[in-house]
Image (tube, rainbow, N blue to C red):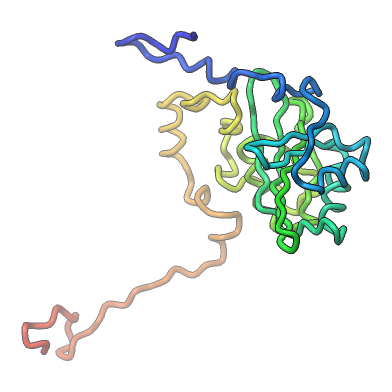
Length: 240
């Protein structure tokens, strides 16, 4: 067991960066089983349509199908799932990522729903830490726009072809990296004193989107004038 810190001393959280323990089924690089019997017929169809693009599949929680695909063919495969009438995954519920730590690949996760067929499918792509780039799927689902920006912001994954790839939760000038990476310190990369100094020296523009302040006319509040020509005050008990 790692030493999490004794009483009276600061806890050591360095063990968090290594991530959870790795099982054979979860290991990247095909160490787990190549395939398992799927619950969703879309998985079988993917194996038949893209024998070189599907890497392996799993079933989680008894009936949740997960398919690992080649990142270089993600738009081709997801586009086929979206356009093929027998599949018709018309709703992209989420785009997120998982970092298991320990130098393992980051998984980009696409949660798909086919509303007409009442089917769910999870597609994953594994990206090496030195190659965190993948094609954007905004051309398939417009709703992927902000979801991909969140993954870019918090994990550092670049989505090629995204129409407006920039941070969405952290400020544009945030210099500490990507907060949901396992190698990100729990208290940030800067000291508390440096974090405080940066917060106190921020410009108002740091809290707004570019161009949101420029050209705006301040809203002026006029003081109410009473019937006697003076400033209006509170009404008396009779409402006069």
